[in-house]
Amino acid sequence: MKLIKSKDYAEMCQKAARIFAAQVTLKPASVLGLATGSTPVGMYQELVKKYDEGKVDFSAVRTVNLDEYVGLSGDNDQSYRYFMNHNLFDHINIDKANTHVPSGLAADLEAECADYEAVVASMGGVDIQLLGIGNNGHIGFNEPCDCFPVTTHPVDLTESTITANARFFATMDEVPKKAITMGIGTIMKAKKIVLMANGKGKAQIIYDTIFGPVTPQVPASVLQLHPDVLVFVDEEAYSVIAEKCTPEQLATIL
Ligand code: GLP
Image (cartoon, rainbow, N blue to C red; front, side):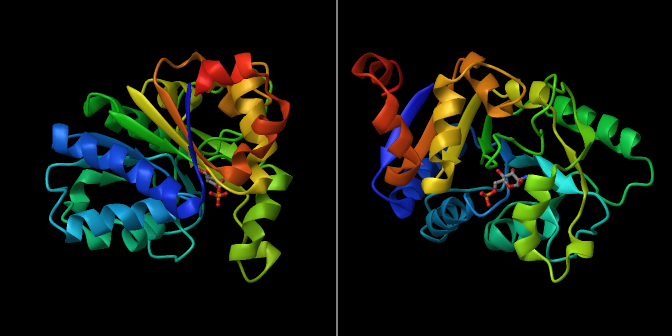
């Protein structure tokens, strides 16, 4: 894993956006694995800016998103499909037919998961996968558990994730309790992975992800086993690493 420090969120987003822009420039028909949450919003804004400046062409790009809430339609403003349209797809020259988010309304969730896994495989896999990280170390919606789920699957969200998401909904009853997510195996098959984290609240989990044991109790820790992971952090998300790591440990990631 390689760590890229930035002084603040804005700089972190600029640096991460350069990696995605370079990917699309070098391979116009890239398959981008995309993520939701507040963390990547600034990175998407940077990509839109590069598109507006004529620096990136998304016309041949295909995308697959990590996850979606069960029970929300794509036009619900809390769905991840809506998030992607609103934050990125509506502002660039991507063909929406080439963008994929699992359907949260599928009658048969298991079949939807199998179909989604097949979609990812039919594209030849993901060239570069963007990840945020939950406070408990989840990636996509792979929550802490006893084993790493391999493929796309339905998941019961943990209390901590439901509580963290509650801020976006008017009442607790409306907060989704289930989601569909790519599995850890699906994520690990990506050729390259970009993990982004900012703010003090992510500092401990970023330390655990990089320096803790590889355990399904910290799902992101599995990334230690991937050969090509870039971790983008701001000063605050770096703070526990700065405090706890020896110079020898730092030398392995900087
Ligand atoms: C949700 C998403 C994750 C995301 C996480 C962190 O749980 N499913 O993909 O990484 O939120 O969100 P934030 O970036 O808002 O901290």
